[in-house]
Every structure is written in C-alpha cells, then in structure tokens.
Length: 148
Image (cartoon, rainbow, N blue to C red):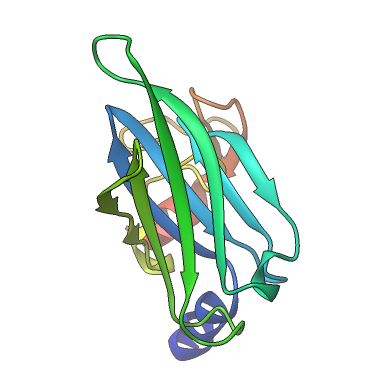
C-alpha cells in the first residue's frame, strides 16, 4: 500500500517547499501537469497543462525584510520528458540563481495543512476536524494523527 501511495505521489501531486525572503513558498505539480505557486499559502501563479514544455517559469515579486521588492522566478524543470516524475524547482532572485525548493514527500506532510502548508501541530480538534488558522479550511483530525 505504501508503494502505491509513493507511485501516485510521483505521477502527480508533487510539492516543493522552501523559505524565500522570509516567506514560505510552495510549488505544486498536479496530476495533469498543472503547476501552482503559493506564497504564504495563497496561490499567486497557476499554469494548466504546463508539462508540455518541460521548462516552465512563474514570475512574481516578493518584498524583502526591509520592504524592497525583488523579482522572483520559480522554474519548474522536468527532466523526464513531460512525465513529471523527475521534477526540480529552482528559484532565481533578481535574475541570479538563489535556491532550490525541497521535494516534500507525501509521508512527511503530517502536521501541515494540505491546502496552505501551515503547521497544524498542537491545534485542538473540534468535531474531529482541525481548522487551519491561516486559510480557514478544515482537515480531518484522523489524517493528521495517522501521519504522525
């Protein structure tokens, strides 16, 4: 069963996460090759059917700690020829390579909101659900407890 979950995670639904200029940035690849970039849990860029090209970039502006705006490019690199099984996500800050986002395996997303990646650790369940304080969505408490 665990190998099936891992295969499904590789064929779609991949997530990459990292902190850029003090903001949590998450890049998601959907089952049909669509791509979404979220900053602090909110979608800022989406591209459907992006897997056709193999290299797709999303452009956004993030403010630094001092309030200075920075141009950020989120590059999705597919090294598998469009199958989305060998993905890598790189970040360019003002045109220069800055960082790579880390792949988040499905088994390690236990205490995070599946919608915005906010930490649900230590929150109390009400009616067998945990409400995310960041995005307001509900997650079944059994899913969070099962993954711990």
